[in-house]
Image: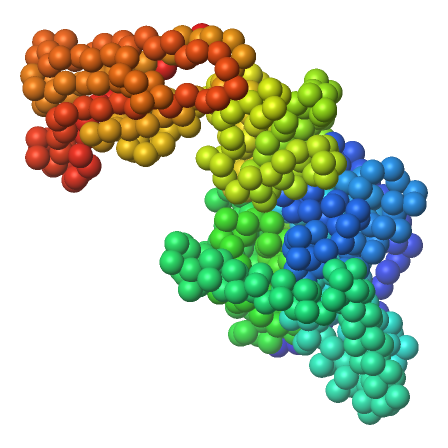
Length: 613
């Protein structure tokens, strides 16, 4: 089939050379894309992982998940180097991302050329990869994904060149070791190019093969060895890696009981690698068209790309957290981008006879239109992150500005929120607890206390929000709201309360026969008003009793005609919290009274709302 159409075989070197015009086009495009990447950089950290990376620059310890095991050692090392020139941990990490983003297009282009794609397909594929929403978005912050991707592509390019150049093979293996020292999974990407290069290079220079393999191993061992040393000991490091691996296998992998069904996860990996439906589906359709071409007509460049990235995609389907797939897919979105560029050429060749348009023009039209649409889809999200502080950072900085640490205790929940607190407030700026329910409601030593917590918490004096719609399917559904709550205003629903039903407000919910609610201590007396409703099914017989700190303060007899009532309870001033207990001597099950209901809960009263003043 060689030579029958322009998309079936490798380009002819005599007619597909890098002319001066093409070199200028590549340089100008790379400069424009680099400038766009700098313009679109995020203003602050937002994701938990960004704060963990930043904390790793202060105190690298994978046991503390600074950062997550096994440590991404070379990414942290690059950021440490950048910190000598850039002020701030987040900014140093982001500088590494900016540098990688500036190199993305030329590196991917040259890797595609080494794989055997023609100029048009290589350039279009690099542009599509740059424009992918997940690459644009996660490349704007302090994640390791884009630097890892650029190093993996650089390694791939040199390893493919290494089939005819021993020196290129050695340098390629060095970059392969570096890529694996950021993300060990990158080994899956460059295994095929490395094997092809080893087979070809072994015939001409065995010394280069042995030397390249030894160099890659040395870089990997040195990088992760540094992570071990920084963590403190091999035992601590190995235990952290093992524990983290067990967590992934138990929770994120296909064995996780709450994980989405495998076909659904596979669809996210192979068909919908980023937000939306139409754009990723179109990109994937073009890519799979190229994959069919690789199988039927043995198009080697497409087969090489598929062989490089399909193992990573299979691993992701089986092992990675589906909720973060938009970010993880940065590692294999080149599969879709490069093959989609080739798929556009196939479409162009199919329709050229009746369009009477050159293949190149149709291919570029399809690829550039798709790239422009992806950028346009991502711009609203980029505009928000580049111009505003993220909710967790805004909340922590508000605490730092308005609270004196010596006069106010700041509580945060362990994990993601605590990481943001340590980064913005320092290691002694906040005290962490396992859950929000573990925050003490008293005034310790007479000091006021506040809670900085994820979500929109009842009683918050201020809530920081970020619009959700532009990030739908792009960012994780975390930290879109962040609350600063005085402990004196906190309400803790304890034993006896059911979770709110769908559509309920922040305090509306059902209780059983008895329910307890805690209220934070306050230096000022307050009045609590509870808006309650007795179910119609039990109203004629149900007596209600309310107690404050064990002392009965109100009794309501049965009333068959009035279902809703208010209860006003005084909460005295002091350093101790208060507990309100509500009891109903009758309950009912919706399943016994409502046709078609499957609700078997024993319901006593419904709380419609409350105010504390």
